[in-house]
Length: 407
Image (cartoon, rainbow, N blue to C red; front, top):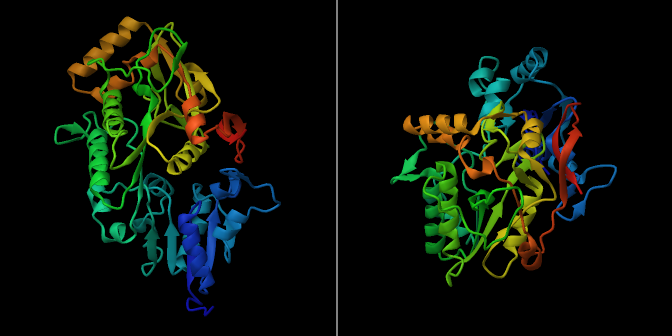
């Protein structure tokens, strides 16, 4: 191959596949690519030991080698002043800077364009942010969407409360609900789309007193008009997709999932633990059971749904279920028990002030009653079985935190 980029120096601060693979192509074209990684844990992609049913037990990780071929690697902790200073020296002599870190991380590490340009005014700065929100209509109406004849859509609704006290609304609806309706509408109208896989929340179910709630797909939803706004929007999304399960035009699969855990101690889709780390309040005398699901098992369930030949609603869960107090402690969100009357008065006050997102973390049956999910339908129809365990482990940087690992 002709080295058309010979003499071009590229600095890559990225992880996993998207940007690292782009940098690998630049290296194949002759560019001198230096990959900057954390000196202890490295690129998080190095920790991948299993992809679906394929286990990586070789002395080298071919997936990492493929995405990082032709590069030089430098272990550098750019969160430290001395590491950041060394990175700026590299930037001063580089031509291109590539990153796929999220905006919050880029700002924290001071590697935004305005941070780098004073060191190199001619630097070409390229960032790839797949997490950036894009309008649903822009995706479905794009020429590339139609040219590719996309036949399957996977929809993961927004999770967690709004960053503002009032949830943003579209045509009078919460953003999550409006987006779900738009996705379904566009999927029905797009001629090439034949299948829609939607990820929903298991917190839509009505919970009875106690921790013995064993919920299957026919269990009743919580249609109480006093249900918190965040849960209500999940229920609206659930009912929107569920209504089309019998559609002749579109194959719809709805996956109801509990608290999702990813490596590093991150938790998603739990109405009590959403948001930043820090203490939470819960009613004294209650410690609800929370079923867990590894993010890798969720991805595996989605892949299985993509191969399904029929519509349906399925519960998806992992092996573990932990008390809320334990889960909160393991995720740096300790639960502080307070009298229920105090919690109710606080929630009522927040409602009067119009702060529904704050009220969600103080009001709801999930703060008192636990549940587990019956996944036999997913096992029977999709062939789903969890492949990962969730528990405390010592990570590469030496810290003990909530991690996922192959079962």
